[in-house]
Amino acid sequence: MRKGISTAHSVVDPSPQTRWFASVIVVFYALVTMIPLAWIVMTGFKTPADSISYPPKVVFSPSVEGYCNLFTTRSRQTPEYLASLPPAQGICEQNARNQQMAVAGPSNFAPRFTNSLIIAFGSTVLSVGFGVMAAYAFSRFQVPLKDDLLFFILSTRMMPPIAVAIPIYLMYRELGLSDTRLGMILLYSAVNVSLSVWLLKGFMDEIPREYEEAAMVDGYTRLQAFRKVVLPQATTGIVATAIFCLIFAWNEYAFAVLLTSGDAQTAPPFIPIIIGEGGMDWPAVAAGTTLFLVPILVFTVLLRKHLLRGITFGAVRK
Amino acid sequence: MTSLLDHAARATPAPLVARMRGLSDRSIAWIFIGPTMLLLLAINIFPLIWTVKLSFTNYRANRPNAEVSNLGIENYVSVLTDPDIWAAMQTTAHFVFWTIALQTLIGFSLAYLIDRKFRGHGFWTTLILIPMMLSPAVVGNFWAFLYQPQTGLFNTIAGFLSGASPSSFSMLGEVPLAPWAIVIVDTWMWAPYVMLICLAGLRSIPEYIYEAAEVDRASKWRQFWSITLPMVLPFIMLAVLFRGIENFKMFDMVNLLTSGGPGSTTEVASITLKREAFEKWRTGYSSAFAIILFVAVFGLANIYVKALNHIKNR
Image 1 (spheres, helix red, strand yellow):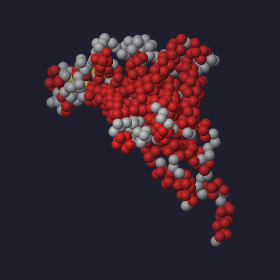
Image 2: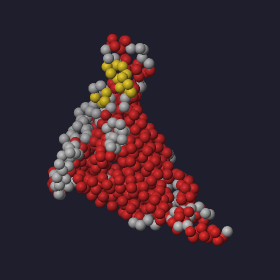
Image 3: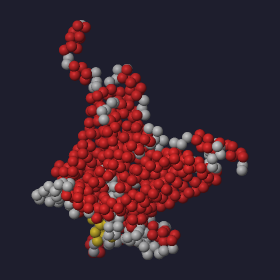
C-alpha cells in the first residue's frame, strides 16, 4: 500500500484499481453501444452493393449515392434516350446516368422532413405555452383538487397511443383534420402538455415566491410579476422543457403512422419505407436516418444536465 | 377634487375596479389552467368517452354508413375470452419481464461503475445516454438491417463470437430468436434510462453513512447490501415502473422489426390492437380492448405517481 495516496483521499473514495477497472468496463460498454450508430452513419456513405456485401465492409470508398437516392427519384431509361439528354449536371445526375438512369425529380423526403420540423416546433410552442401557464398556477395558487388534476394530466400521457388513435382517427375524419399538420400539432401538444406542466411546475417551485411578492409590493400586478419576474427566472427550465417536447414530437411514430399518409406525414413513418430497385435501399435509409438523428444528438448534449428531470417528469433532480 | 374622485370610485362597478387592480389570483389560476384542460378534454377525454360508447357497438370505421347496433357488453366478453388476446397479453408480459430484468441489471451495474468517478466519466455517461433519446421507430428500423442474415453486422459479430455461420440464423425470421431480437434492441435503447435514474439514487446517498460504516469496519460487501442497495431501491423501483408502463405499450420497434411475426411470436398487445382496429376494422371490438388496456395502464400509472411523490417527499 502506498500510504501517500491512500491518505490523500477520504476513506470512502474508490481505490485507483477500482477506478481503472470501472472505467475500462464503462468505456467498453459505451463503445459497443455506439457501434449501431456508427454503422448507420457509415452505411449512408456506401453504395447499395457495398452495403450488403459479405463480410460487411468496414473500409470502403465513400459514395454520396445514398444521399442522392434519398432526395431524388430516378427512372431507368434506354441508352438512346440518355444519350439524347443534355450533359449531366451535378453529382447525383452523374451517378444516375452511370447506372442507365435519369433523375426524374425530387423524392418525398424533403417535404416529410419539413412536416416533421413544422409539427415538432408547432406542438412545442403550444404545449410549452400552455404548460408555463398551468405550471405557474399549480405552483403558486390554491387550486381545488390540485393533486387530482395533476394526476389526471399525467395519466393522459400514460395511455397507449394505439388505443387513443382509434377515436382520434374517427374524430379527425369528421372534423377534416385527418392527415393535416394542424391535426398532428394539436395531438402532439395534448400528449406533451402533461410533460410540460409537470416539468415546469418543478422549475417554478424552485423560484422563491419572495421575488414576486417583492415585485407586487412595489406595485406590480400579479400578471406583471409573472411576466417580468417569474418568466425570466424560469428561462432555463422553459428551454429544457421545450427541447424535451421537441424531441418527443420529432421521434413520435405510432400516431404518425396511423393518422398520416400523405400531406402531413412526418419522417419516422417515411424513412422505413424508402425502397430502391429490388428491395430496401439501405444506404438511402441510412442517409435519412443520419439526417434525422443529428438534431437529436445535438439536443442530447445540450440537455445532459436536465435529462434526469425530463425522463422522470421532474420528480428526480440532481 | 377629492370629492369628485371619491364619487367616480363609488360610481365605478366593483368588477371593473377589481380588473383595474389586476385580476384576482383565483381567476388567474383558472385562466392559466384553462387552456391545458381544454386541450386535454378535446384530444384525450372526449375521444376516450367516444371509445367507451363505441365499445358497446358493432361499429366499423371502414363502413361509416352501415347500421350500428348496440351489443351491450358482448365485445368485452369476447375480448376477455379470446385466446389470441390472452396470447398477446402473455407475449407482452414476457417482453416486459425480460426487458426490465436486463435493463435493470445492466443499468444498475453501469451506474455503480460510473459512480466510482473515474476520470472522464461525464463524457462517457453522455455517450451511453444517446440511444435512449433517439426515435425507437427510426433506429429500430435500422436494426432490421443489422439483423440481416449473412450480411448484417449483428449476425457477423454474433457469428464470430459464437462460431456459428452468420448465414445460418435469422434473428427476425426464426420463432425462438425473434423475441430476443426485440429484447436486445429495447435493452440497448433503455438500459441507459435505468442507469441515469440509478446514478441519481447512488449520488443521493450521503458520504457520511459510508464513513460511519468504515469506522465500524463493515466490509465493502456488507456496505453494498446494507447501505447502497436499500437506498437506491426506490429509484430502481421508479425506473422499473416507468419502463413497465412504457413497454406494456410497446409498438414502434415491434411494428418495424417483425410486425408481430414470425407467425404471432412477437405479437404484443399494441400490435393486436392495431390489427383489429386498423386492418380488420373491427372498431367496436378494438375499442373494448382499448378500454381494457386503458384500465390496466391507469392502474399502473396510479402506482407510478404514488412512487414519484414518495421519492419527491424524501
